[in-house]
Image (cartoon, rainbow over all chains, first blue to last red; front, top):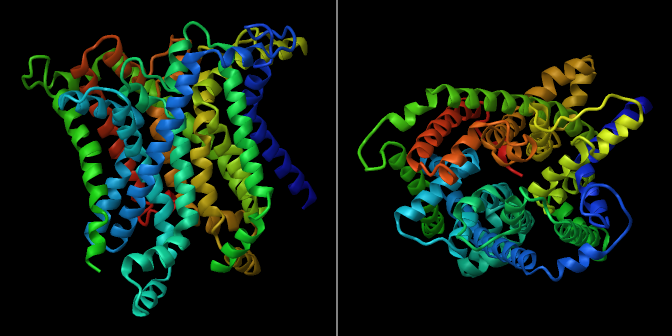
Length: 265
Length: 271
């Protein structure tokens, strides 16, 4: 048993190393004085340069703004859709779920191209709006998939009891159903936000000239070599998310929440 | 009660407007030439040798990547189950968190590790091992794919496996099944929906990637994704690009439909 435990620890460690080797590399290189990969001394100059690079900062702003708008819109659309779909039965329900699967099965390449062609065909000019529309489209299915199982688990009679006691359906929904869906909604939102943030292919096809997100900026820079200030930015982003995550997991108030959730289960 | 159905309305409109209609547009472009006349040429262009070669290579690499992901992810999911549900945070930590560092940048970072004169290579050289560089080879591309798509295999697998009732496993053991039998007769069949959804979520993006092959293939290796992307960006032959993507799409949809036959309840697709 102990041998087994030992091997499973090693296995987890190896996967961890595999996932984090490039990240650590980037972090280390962001402190490198030299532009290349050869270490020539510790320096913070790329961090200084980062805050003077309008190109990178505006790409960061675009990326965050697009992710925020798309994830929010996708969550609203997705939660509404879940409630609607859940009240359907049989063929209609399956048709919706099949529709939901299209963007997931249809590789990003085809989705991105298809949207680009449609925007052109209908004379819509490329810009922020086209990127956001595209991002909402590929984010909604993730929200639906996160919220749907939670909705199926909720007890219908609680909602019915609330309505019997005189609550208006909308009020009953916000007071009774929504709190139970919250974990699914939060994870759907975060997933959508992360997907939008990390997307390259769909943005590549639906962006207008002159607008860059971090992904497309990096892609265009690959040929001439990526500036180390980009590594610096990624390091800052990554570390701040890590701190937020740790605060969420180990910070105060967390324990109560998990206890509550366990009870619900 | 019936009013509830209407809530799905905006979603339906949205999905029709931005997924169904665009797909129709791909078909329209794919079956017409520059002048707008009907033609089969763009679709049948897939059988040209250079396209067939790229398609075959993509298929081979995607298959390899999916297999590697499955073999890496399955033991991990079992280990995580054995450690208890609380380790779910490990999954988030290891597989979702890296996504906050841009995927192109992370893929590009492998160049620093693997390239000739890169960190890993220098290390191996100093240890007296052979000098090597795998950048620009199929191996590098598969590694990049596995690195990027492994989370999409782990998440559904872990999701399904962690839900397997411990009592079922204990019952099998009580009835005299050994470890292998428990795995073969209990765990494997019950985890099938997760396997199916994991395979789908890894195979599709690795079959159609062009960014990973661009970065790690040193622009020498052409996958079908690269060919289609170039038809749109540099060659500017949208009709041919549409025709090829149409064939690719149908090809993927057919193989995935065959696969999803085994996951009827869609159990594996939830997060």
